[in-house]
Length: 281
Image (cartoon, rainbow, N blue to C red; front, side):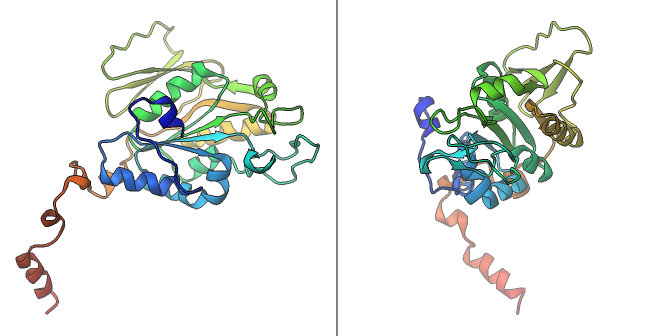
């Protein structure tokens, strides 16, 4: 519902739980001129929809894939979801005994072309990351930690506002400069990385600590693993590959929306069919 609520000219609809990637892929193939913004959750992505999540990444469908991740099943009264951290506690005191599925780690392992993590309480970081994700060509996955104020915003939760604020470790200050604006960077040389997207837009990353190269997938995996071992929530743009072909390029889908093609354009003519059959005679 998020696009329909907050984007005035968007056409939003709800799909079957766990099937957002299939719906988005179908809509994108029907009209690739639209901007695809898919909103999922931790249960939707890491449980019932895990298979679809993985195949969307494998195909690199041009979509901004946002995970509203709170580590709990709020609809069914607060059970742990698959992204809940080992040792975290429910509101009534139960302790999670299972290892978590980390959406960012899974996405990186599958070769996702844009991987980022942020915190819903940090609008300064979330907004440019979403803008950059929309400008990116391919699957852009954002895991946004979004505390559930009813069931998972308490002491013992690693998805609460207080825990994230105390343990968040941002790897860079993110700015997004669209293609129609001139790039003005007034930082000291060597303190900024500039990533140019396919449409001419720029992601400008100001170093906040140890230098992180967002074009190095192994480095992104290492940053996540080190953060987990040290008890930190690493946020920011973890990885981006601007050279990877997206799904419609790989499949050679025409620029003209498929929904606008006439029946005669979608099937073989009588002569073409006869020629095709003659090859098997």
